[in-house]
Image: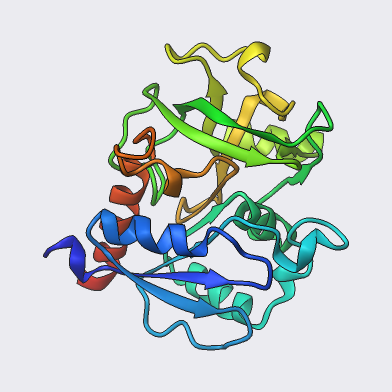
Length: 238
């Protein structure tokens, strides 16, 4: 079955700004992007869902707090509970944490400055819908652009995340060294992305949708979208 058979929904919230980029990335990687509206209750039969980056509702209250209460989030939660693959990117990661679909929270960067640059990530787990085609220990280059990307968690949450292997990506050097110099925002444990217990819901602060086309930048996001499309097609096959 060709990847074109995978239909990936990308949600637009008021203030989203990377929704079109995510749709373009899905198309570039061979899937079919389906725009979804936050106030709807219709997922339009998609096989995977992407919550994109941006500043939903102007980041009022907390980043992602209002979007986490959106009507469509009820359907996305039910979709995920059925095993459907869900990827949250930057603001989408914040939304997943605020809605309780992922543990932890994202707060202001340690520097208190907005950061926009390419970073390296080390893949920590292949047991997810977006890394199944990747190897633990490999490094990929992707951009970040956020002001509130510092991942934090309670001691209990962090112990659970680490003991259950739910860290998906860590900020690292190009050769895979995880140290404070490679940590752009102060995230605990250099954590750049985490998963739920089943591995079908993943959130990360870096932007893989900006890292698929070699004509415009790094290509570290290709493996993530290829894995997401494969996971989506597994759902179609079932």
